[in-house]
Length: 448
Length: 158
Image (cartoon, rainbow over all chains, first blue to last red; front, side, top):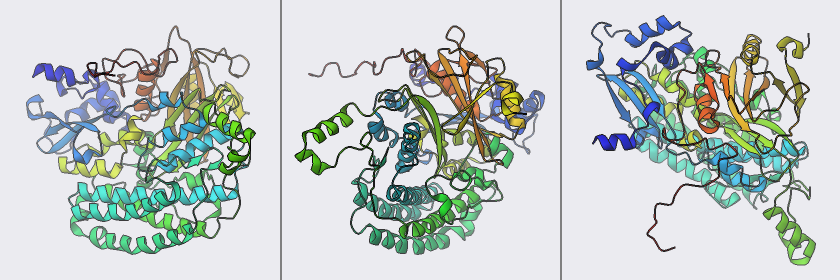
């Protein structure tokens, strides 16, 4: 038994027993965000819940349990160590890394053309957003970010917004499942599948598309894409209204979410939380509006904010964001112009398939692009876009060769799970499940 | 007063992005000045190992070192972004932690420590975050080779 513990233990990464915790470590967990002094933090550590009697609380009455990494409500392989007193969570520490596959290291080995296949697997619930941010960073380094054909830019917006819908629909499904609304899981998955079916038609794959590439998109939108999108836009809004009936207005649903996992604007900003978590606190920050990219400044949409910073706000924001995305998609539909879908820069774009059969030079060119790749001028750049989960950023350093010298993805989930200990402090174990669910972490992106 | 004077370090703008180049000693002061200036959120902390690419462009007076820690700041009200690039020498890879200013850097600095071996002083919990606790080496360093994990299925015919 002890051997097993030793072999599976993560040592210093784990949550320490109360008797071994110093005030400085408690600061890490709660004090630093609440801007407490060390003595105040120590006091807080003695009673992290207001109604717990300080004197009664000693090591015998609390226990540390593991939740995950194989717990179904942890959305993959998130492991939480919870210190409990009875049903109440006193402290919590997320332990991550179980899905770490060294994708940033891999990214240094792949050419810029291959890079999108790598990053698309990070946040697997919104793969197109990952491809977009990577492609935009590469284009900025190449100096072609202003020359991307209009059709490609609008198509990117279309795909990314549909992806936001798919991702939030997945959240609806898992959030319902986590809170015991099991039929909701089927409904959310059903609607998401409709969106993925469209992706399959456009990109050939349901997920991990590698469709948005440096220079544009991989292929033109297929014939009849407009009708398919219109069918989606007719199909989904009534289903969202059903969700309202099934969940939003239900007393049980509200009881489970309202006032659970509250976070203040100050805490959210201090912890670097972005996306629906930040917006649930009332901070209206959305990169699509505040630092527009693509053509987001040409379309109308609302940035939805909450007021209480609780799990219900985060649920409601995501539901409303699906509707906003539908609004954006409707506007995009009429504005996708005809024309090229890739930049006609021979350095970046391979010759069309038809030319390869006719021209030896085209064949060589094609071969060179896909084996050696194209060279990117020296420099470093950080580009950020709004993913369904928050700010996803891509930092690329180029040394002038055809592979990135360093490729770093700032994953919103990685930063957002730091809010878990704050949201969970003093809540019940059952609420802990609701809180994890409302943060909506994608572990592929957390661990990369 | 120009930004360069206000923060007391070189400021460059390439590809439309502002980058400050503080020295290691001035790093915390500059981060503090940025926070007071409205850059309320530290969005990203990462690092680069310039072992095999030493000749990168840096402003005058900044000597290139092996490691470079890159921290991104965001001003939510002014809708501005700025990036800090700090040189960290190989012989003494330490840097003060931003934790007291921005608690959200806790996980990011742990990741930099895990992947590059840069130590952040005054970080409350500097342990590995992605790799197992007993792992040797720091994977994103350039002298750390790709794919050297022994294969488990030794007995299988290959």
